[in-house]
Image 1 (cartoon, rainbow, N blue to C red):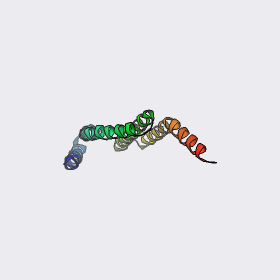
Image 2 (tube, one colour; image 1 turned 90 degrees about the vertical axis):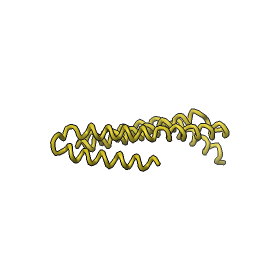
Image 3 (cartoon, one colour; image 1 turned 30 degrees about the vertical axis):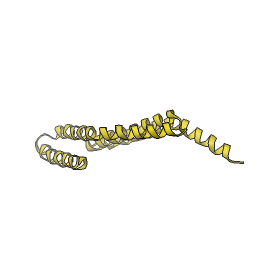
Image 4 (cartoon, helix red, strand yellow; image 1 turned 30 degrees about the horizontal axis):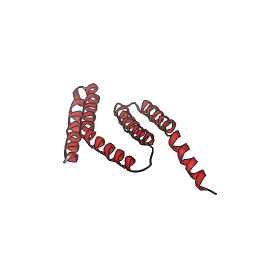
Length: 128
């Protein structure tokens, strides 16, 4: 099971970080980034499977493929932003983390404008 691998990587990384912080605290961030990359590589296959299922649903319905592409990009931005924010917070840079978080939210809002406008147009066309 993948979750057991992920939990194992997390626990091992935490133990290594605790040990390294005593002697070389500057290397603790590298262990954290390495663990994050390992965990992301485990779930990358699952993400591609989810994308394929969503594409098959859009092919069967009248949903615009551009909207699916936008939703996948928005989800990717959210995941990467959260990853970057976590690394910033682990490094003790919460001010930078909050700026990265805000930037990710603004980018997501700007990318979602076509979806929101299409939704509003649909609602307006339904109303009498």
